[in-house]
Structure formats: structure tokens, C-alpha cells
Amino acid sequence: MKGQRVVALMGGMGRSFDGSYAEFTLVPSKNVFKVETALGWEELAAIPETYFTAWGSLFDSLQLKPEDTLLIRGGTSALGLTAIQLAKSVDATVLASTRNENKRDLLMRQGADNVLIDNGTIREQLFSLYSQGVNKVLELIGPSTLLESAKLIRHHGIICSTGVLGGKGMLNNFDPIKDLPSGVYLTGFFSNFPTQKVIDEIFRLINIKNLSQTISKVFSLDEIGKAHTFMENNNANGKIVVKT
Image (cartoon, rainbow, N blue to C red; front, side, top):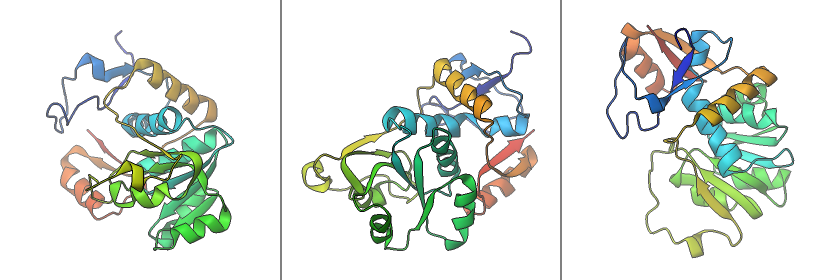
């Protein structure tokens, strides 16, 4: 319908087929979803992929419930900040990790109940708070910390591996029988299959809970180089938006 607001998200864009920055673009219809929202365009641009990935990781793969205690490893990433917000919107207890002590206040403002400093003592910090461990972990650092995270989970807990912030994409010589504690469940989330139903659910929660994305900085299209430098220097505390 003419005038209908829409968003587009991955569904293979940039993976299964090439994409690029452009003022105008032709996107497969399966990647386009209608939305009902009063959000401004800059804020709306920051939502689709990040919220969809966080939503799928938390509510599909981790089956997050209000009574759960969730650890988010890589909490200061844009996805981590969004996951904190979504998890708190359903009243789960949230711990978030960061390597940078200076990011503690950022995580607490986002809603984290506790912040763990990833300095080699995260196991001791977590078990001092929860002697049996947590029952859900969203692993955004990836294979480089996955096996450590699996040991922070209580019996019959779930770990969802979604990110690769640690730069390591695969586990070499992984033996699930020996490397995973018995009764700990490992899953993942792959964002290639968005649906209108899930997009509707996400925006319904955003509207009901008055949620807003954390935007670090907005760049114009001719500032793409600066946007990448800003991102690669790890200066962003939230989403980077590029507008035409």
C-alpha cells in the first residue's frame, strides 16, 4: 500500500547475495515487512536486524521467562544492549559482562541487575552472586568464550551462541560429550529467516513497553568512511545509523 511504513532486514542480504550502501535500493519482497510505529526514521533504522536477532535469541532459542536469570556476554555491543532491554521488559534478572570497567554505568543504565567485568575472574564474580550459576546465557563473544560460559550454567540451563565478537568463528576439536557439562543445552540463533509475525510481535512490545533503541551516533551517507572508523575503533555505545 502506498505510504505504508516498512523495514528491511537481513534474510540473506550481505550473505546469500551481495548488498551495498545506496540512496535507493531494490530489495526482495521476502526481506520487507510492514510496521506500525510512530518512531522517527533514524530510530526506526536502528531496530530491525538488532531487535530481530535479540528477540529470536532470547524468546525462541533461550525460551526466556520472567523467573530466569540471564547472563549476556558482550553486553556493551549494540546487540547486547538491546538484549538487556528486551530481557528486562519481561522482568527477567539480567547480568551483563564487559571487559571495560568504565562501561559499568552504561550497562546499569540500560537495566542490567549486575555487571561482571570480563578480566579472567568472571566465574568467581558470577558464583559469588549465584552459587548454582545462571540458567540462561546469551553468548555474543562466541567460540572464544563459549566453553567457559557453559560452565557458568546450572543443570538444565541453556546457552545460545549468537555473536562472534571475540573474532573466533569456530571451535577446533570440539567434543560435545567432554566439553559441555552434562545437562547443559547448547543452541544458537541465525537471523536469515525473519517473518511478518515476529516483526509484528517485536513492534507490539516496543509500543506497549515504550522501548527505544540506544543510538550511539548518526552519520550521513557521504560519511560512510567515518562511520566505519567510528565502529572499528570501538567508539560506539549502541547502534550506528547512516541516513541519506
